[in-house]
Image 1 (cartoon, rainbow, N blue to C red):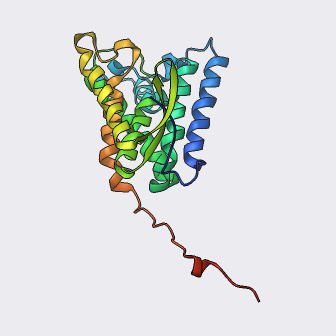
Image 2 (cartoon, rainbow, N blue to C red; image 1 turned 120 degrees about the vertical axis):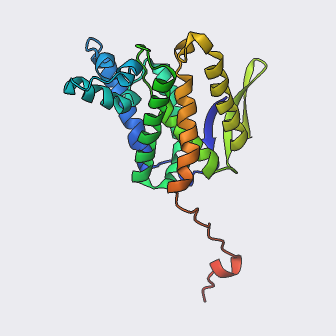
Image 3 (spheres, rainbow, N blue to C red; image 1 turned 90 degrees about the horizontal axis):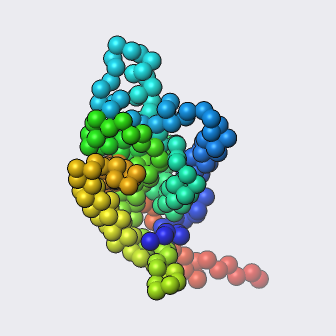
Length: 237
C-alpha cells in the first residue's frame, strides 16, 4: 500500500514537518557526498553500545547516547529515505496541526528515541547498526491513528498488473500497517529483530508510543466554521 495523501490535513505545507523532511534529505545528501567518511560508525545506533554503556569513557558514552537521535537522520539508500519521507509527508501535517509546531518536533524525536530503545531491548547484544527515520515516523502514524480516526488515506493498491487508486479508512490502513510490523517482528524469532535488514520492533515501539503520547499533548480539534448563504451574502445597493 503506497499512501499518496490524506483527508485530514487542512494544508499540505506544515513548517515543522517540512523542516524534518528537508533535514533528512539534506543529511542523506551529505552521506552520498562524504561516502568515504564513516558516518555510520559515528552516528548510527548500535544496540550493544547502549546496553553496555561505557560509563568510564565520557566520549564513548556521549556518542552512544547521541546515537539515539542521530541515527534517526541517517538512511541507507535512496529508496529507504524516499519511502520514509513519503510517509512523513502524508501523515505528518495532520498530526502537526493538532500538536503544534514545537511539540510536533519534540514528539517526533521522542518517538524515535523510544523506537531505538525498543530495538536495544529486543537485541541488546547486537552490533548491527540501526539507522533510519522509520521509528520516529511510526510514532507519527500512531499519533494519526488516535487523533484522526475518521481520516481516509488516498492509496495506491496493486490490482492485477496495474496499480489502482483508492481511499482507505485511516484506522484500517494503520491497523494493517501495524499488524504487519508486529507479525514480522514476532516472525523474526531466533534470527533476531533485524530480519531482512528492517528494524521491525523499532516500528512497533514507535507506533505504540505515538498512540499513548499523542492524546496527552494534542490540542482539542478546532471546529470548522459553518456559514449559511444568508449570513455570508452581503447585498449591495
